[in-house]
Amino acid sequence: DTQRIALVPILNRFNSFKATTKKGLVAMMEYASLEAATGNFSESNVLGVGGFGCVYKANFDGGFVAAVKRLGCEGQEYEKEFENELDLLQRIQHSNIVSLVGFCIHQENRFIVYELMVNGSLETQLHGPSHGSALSWHIRMKIALDTARGLEYLHEHCNPPIIHRDLKSSNILLDSDFNAKISDFGLAVTSGNRSKGNLKLSGTLGYVAPEYLLDGMLCPLFSYSPVCDSLCRLNLIYKDDVLL
Image (tube, rainbow, N blue to C red; front, side):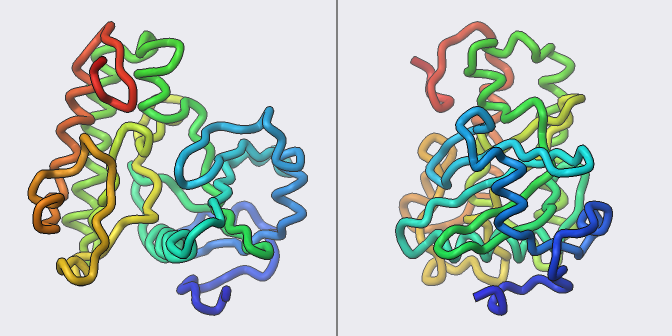
C-alpha cells in the first residue's frame, strides 16, 4: 500500500517537525499521534466537513499545530485521490499553495496533514456568520491576486503543468494575514494525463466550464471567474457560491 505512494524520502517516524517543512520531505505519521493531537478526533476540533471527509485541528507536542484531513473511506476513488494529492503536493512548493506536512494510513482510513490556515476557507469567510465583514476590498483584491499567482505557478512553472480541476472558494484557504493558498489536489491532473479518455468528469457545478461538461475539454482558468465574482459582491446571500 504505502509502497505505491511516490514519496521520496518517507520518514519512518514523525520525529522532526522542521524536517517535514522542507521541499520534498514528507512524514509518515503514526495514527496514535494524530489521535492524541485531535483529542480522539473530537467534534470540538472539527474545522470543516465536505464530500472529501472531515478536517480537524491538531495540537501536537511541542506546540506544533496543523490541520488533519480524514478522507472518507467509501468508494474506490478515495484511494486514488489520496495518492494523487500526496504525489503532487510533496513535489511542489509555493507561497500560494498549501504546504503538506505528512500523511497516515491506518487500516481503511487515510489521513493527510497540512499547515494550519487559521482563517479557514474563503467560502467560510464570505458565506459564514460574518458574511465577509472581515474582508476589506484590499484583502479581497489580495486574495484574488494570491489565487492567480498559485494558478500561474501550477500552469506555468510546474513540469509537467498541473491543472487543479476543482478550484472553488472552499478550496482557497486563508492564513492569519489573509494570504490565500490553494488546497485539495485530489482531483488535480498533470498536462500529460489530460486527454478525454483518461479523465473522469469532476469538479463543482458553477465552477465547471460548459466545454468540459459537453466534451471533456479542460478549461483551467474558468473556475477562477466565479471565485473573483464572489469576492466582488457584498451583502448578498449565497449558498455554495450561488446567489439566492
